[in-house]
Image 1 (spheres, rainbow, N blue to C red):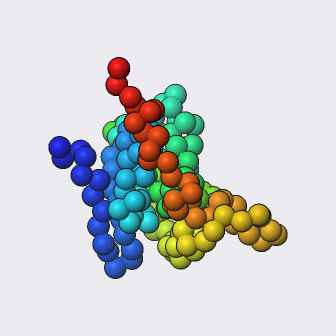
Image 2 (spheres, helix red, strand yellow):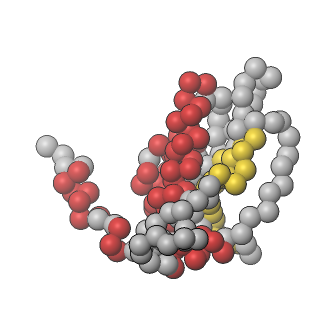
Amino acid sequence: MAGDDFPVFDTEHGKVGLAMCSEIYIPEVARALVLRGAELLFFPAGVDKSLQWYTWRTLIWARAIENLALVVTTQNMFSHQERGLAMIASPEKILFESIAVGLSVIEVSLDPIRELRAGEDKQPTPGSSAVKRGLLGDVWQRPELYKHIYSKK
């Protein structure tokens, strides 16, 4: 099935994963992209999220945190009455957020992502990371639980 491919692309800047809009609500989609090597996840979106505005923003950042990835979203605006959103979330903070119409160019580095992924979860010290390091390691994954969580009766 085409929607089950979880495409990841090697680029000169790093590995990029692509998902669409409401797939942000499915944590396994972002995780599948990351387990295939994606460091930068793109989730282009459709219409104004209206009442879901705050949960949408939170999910973008949550996917960055739980996958130690940069997550990028843009949102279409089909009229001036709609509110769009362009956002880049790192695991540690929101790097960019705008509701303005237009083009924005933001310079980011994947070095912090690579450092977080290569690190180990240790007791926090002053100046350490704002997120758990090494979240993609075996200690933080429990695929054997899926058969129990999603068991069909």
